[in-house]
Image 1 (cartoon, rainbow, N blue to C red):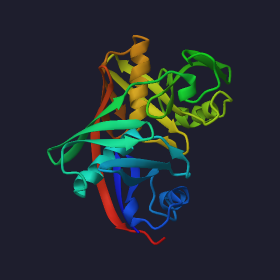
Image 2: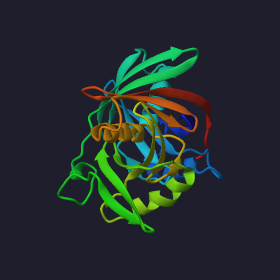
Image 3: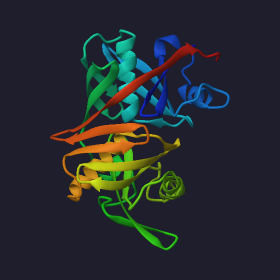
Image 4: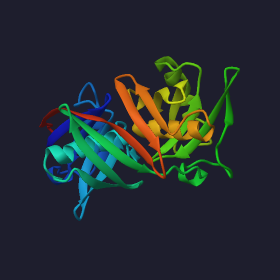
Amino acid sequence: MKFQKYHGLGNDFIILNAKEVETTNYSELAIKVCDRKTGIGADGLIVISFDGEIPRMNFFNCDGTTDTMCGNGIRCMAYYLKRNKLILEDNFEINTSAGTLIMETTMIDGKFWVKVNMGKPNFSPDSIPAISENEIVNRTLEIEGKSYLFTSLFMGTAHTVVFVDKVSDELAEKLGPIFNDTALFPEETNVNFVEIISKNHIKIKTFERGVGLTLACGTGSCASVIVGNRFELLEKEVTVSHFLGDLKIGIKDDIFMTGPSVFIALGEYDV
């Protein structure tokens, strides 16, 4: 089975063309190929299919669970499509389970950049999903005697945003699973811990459902800026810093994410 591997700020993905894969049990395949000891190793698996001429993202976390889409992953998929000449235009659409997203691609100093129209956020509990009659805005969760305010929404996938004084891997790895285990989220949630540097600059650490702590999260970056702007903590143009670099998030009528994608390797995997 032929594969290619890409990353977006360290969030890494194995990408396959559905036409080149014999199995259709992609969840089982994701578990095998994403294993960092016995497989290729990645945070997720992207299988590309086509709806007519429009490419479709089929996304699987490393534990085999599916998700509607992935922000870093869709930039990597855009690079795969362009690099393999499956798409010749610089601007094009990708279908996802969260809707059709528009890519604007460019090469700058030899690096591949993508500006993605991520659509609009949805605070409806049904969209997340969450068990609640009202929007989940500034709710409180007490952990070891300390109260944490959190807000949840659907931004391409389920996200919960928690503002903290200082982010760290240790904080995200400790608190992320606790938020996921609450009965409020029957299908769990991605959890973003956000440190505000200024009204135009934040740092985040994301604990992703089905993955754990990741080096970067595109949809989480969007969700964090949306919530910060809603509470007037952030402006509408914000730099979101991750361990390996930054994403630019802009709020207009829709949400726009701009960031890089990097090709890592190609090869064959023995299924």
